[in-house]
Image (cartoon, rainbow, N blue to C red; front, side, top):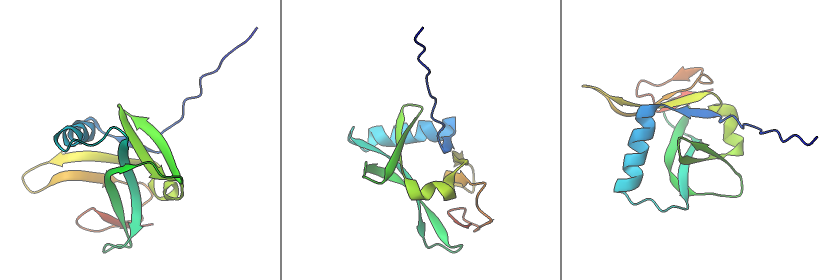
Amino acid sequence: MNMIKDKAVATPITLTEGAVTQLKRIMTEQNIPADHGLRIGVKGGGCSGFSYILGFDVQKEKDDTFEIAGIKVLMEKAHGIYLLGMEIDWVEGLDNRGFSFNNPNASDTCGCGTSFSA
């Protein structure tokens, strides 16, 4: 008897429904090419030590690739230790509008929510 097992690869981050809706809107409005994916990562800088990278890019050799709600997600393998378990949401309120990052690996975040320390 031959059994085939499907291996579900868990994505290191999650996108809320609001974030997915906004990302798909941006992809359509800005005519993002089909060979591009959503790059999520970190870089040194910001008031707390690291800041988030969020934008559309082509896949590179050091990337892991995931699919979340029909969106191709790219993340450099080395960034996984900083982003594992992070949730990206879209916030639209009177005093704040944009993507927010809920990162369980951040030991401290700045007031603007776009940089953190680990």
